[in-house]
Picture 1: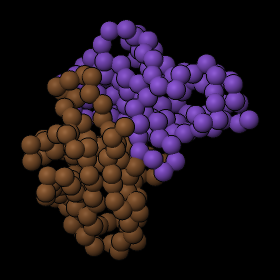
Picture 2: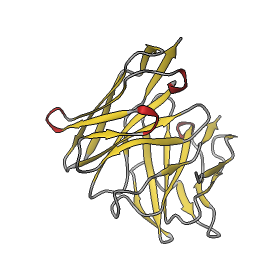
Picture 3: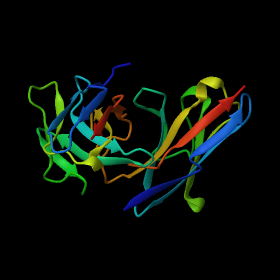
Picture 4: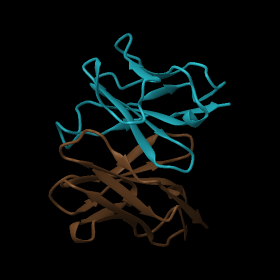
Length: 118
Length: 113
């Protein structure tokens, strides 16, 4: 089965530093997502991306966050100035079509990047 | 708006016993419901989903779930647990007009010999 790949698997950074989390979605997918899970809490939606622009974002996704698809294969999440509360597991996901469009589509998740902000 | 409540952060069963993981949802629109499983060091994998039609949904690895609108529930069951079922299980909901998932907190399934 095709896979969504995320790198690195673990990232440790100092508070206030910028981090970039990288994802390679499945090659024929068009919809891309970032979710995160703070330890002991729910998996939370951050942002969805389609046609080279953000289609939806949650209240968590403030000005410190940005996403980019720089080269047609990678999908990145940048946190400009990390805070302690950004420590979480970040999941990238992709779908061939959006959930709005087709009910038979499957959302594929990567294995996550564990971000630790010290 | 939608939300999901998973009762029990941990469920322990013996190998061969019935697995029951509870999920209740709230949704202002007809829901689409999902169960995902996460094995250690792996991403979330779709077990099964309900969109429309038959309310009893069968998924991979012998799991099934039943959508009960009157109870706003979508509990996950498996008749006989296997050691390999030990993982964290997440229930999620979206509405047909939405493109994002709202997840529950997850339930860790522990299977003992």
